[in-house]
Length: 376
Figure 1 (tube, rainbow, N blue to C red):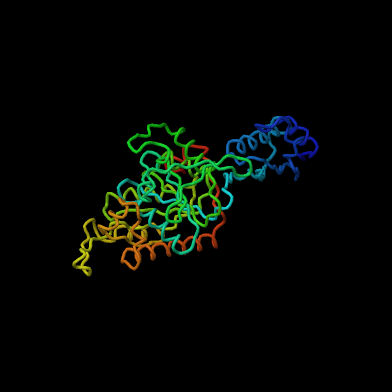
Figure 2: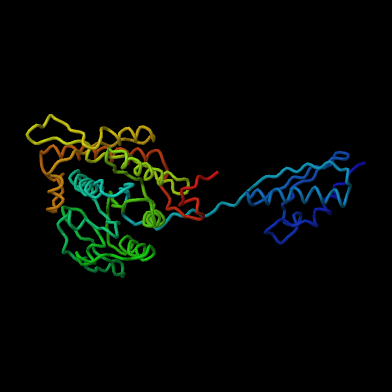
């Protein structure tokens, strides 16, 4: 038995590929048919990588040739997938902002906002132009930490559009939901409303030129985090944790969130806050109240940089409450601590920008991007 190439092509005209209106010959999916006696080789190009469509196309070709040409024909199907490139979801980059750093934690109470405020003022002291977006909608604390609790953003016109002018304190530009609510007022919003407020503070504000925008994220790994990462191309994330096991377990989840395949935000490193207590009268003594080097060990285990440790010092708490971040204390041990950590953050940002392409704002298309279920 000798198979005829033309007959096979005619038989294949009776098959359509799922999702396409034309038959596989007319659509150009069949790129070649070769016959060798009782053997037929069909080269097929598909525009979808879906396994069920590939399998169905292969089964349809075999069945059609066996039914219409010969049941004894030996059929081989070579399938090549040429999926069209999907347009990248780049998000709406904010003109003039070079680096967007998310400061996150797996749980509350680890001093994330305090670390953010001190990173911001240290960056400004180094000569960088810095902005802070207080993304903790339900517990905004930046207005207190920068002594601008009663400030109200004004409206300015930029390129014919009305924009919010961020509040400035210690050369830091900032916006927070705390500027728009009374200090005693609780923000009781569902996720979409909170996300809309954040988008307005991000895109409807006159941020100007910034070297760094720091995002003070709320605790956890929830709706606000996804909204931020869907809106902005984040340069990298810094995770803050205390040394004890309970905090580290949640910090690990915080790191895992950014490393999720569907999110893929580079983790610049982990900062250990409340690492140890040193009494003022015994400056050489260190008391590891919450455990020793827990966050440092976690960073090593996860393969991410360890950015430094912040001790428990009364003046850090007092400075935050009085609205003057502790890193502003000239020639103090705390100033040196935050200078070291901030230099590490800057260095990791430089390393990240030299070795990786710009981060894209994510697009969540399946529950795999926002669940604890591991994708196969």
